[in-house]
Length: 372
Image (cartoon, rainbow, N blue to C red; front, side):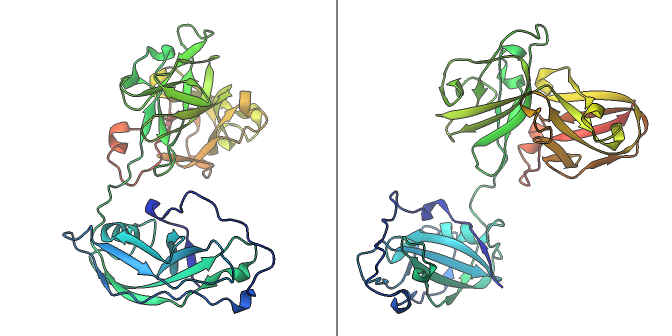
């Protein structure tokens, strides 16, 4: 059985207009429409000295019996895994050898062996704007040998942005951070203690900076932030913050979800009922670290979660577990053998210098459990 991966390079995006709806009566019945024919292609050898050489795949035009807008999709198959390589409104698609190589050897795609010759299969489909799958036609496959090199694409490193504000002295280089949620997603999340510890009831003002300085910053309306915009204001509290920002930080939006506290819940702290939650405290806004001590830890399973405020209706909406060194949202229950007086700590800032060089991009959130 073949497994399909929807993994496509940006250059393969469709043109910026949608297919027109077709008439309900077709000039040619679906079973009489002839499938496209993908033309044979010579073997492809990628070399570091010819990365800009273009590779073109061509196929026959499909006639649906009237002037239909036809979408052609080009697929590549390796080890019974398929990937969508490109889409086109014409009967050809061209890319550079570099782009093709990087697409094929990417570990998140087909993971074709590097610096090796591999046999690949390609096929093309045609489709029109109709709900009938019968009008999607598939060509016979062609095979060719592909010789790859190491990817020239820079590895993804999980990016982060800063949240400076009056609550922490308007110091971007020390400020709490939000971490990118996925590769080049443009979405950043994290837990921030938006409370002026010296004046905990005061309104809080803050902004977002792309780096540990004021060179590039976003502010203004939360549903339409702009570069250099006004300070964002909110009531003090523990906030789970989500930001979606353009790559160049030219625009963005922010979602603020306020919690009463972050807690530890589980058999280790007395049970899985809300009344047993161990409330953690943040003593340093910049550290993004919350900690609390229980005098009679029973040992066993536990997790971290947000309670109260916007999470009152569903205190499991945001919870963390799994690997204690790299906690993940909704991860498995954590365990501890410690009993008696025990301190639980969770940190959302992470080790910034280490993460800035780690191409495996682990979760930056970690926790510790220690006897007091």
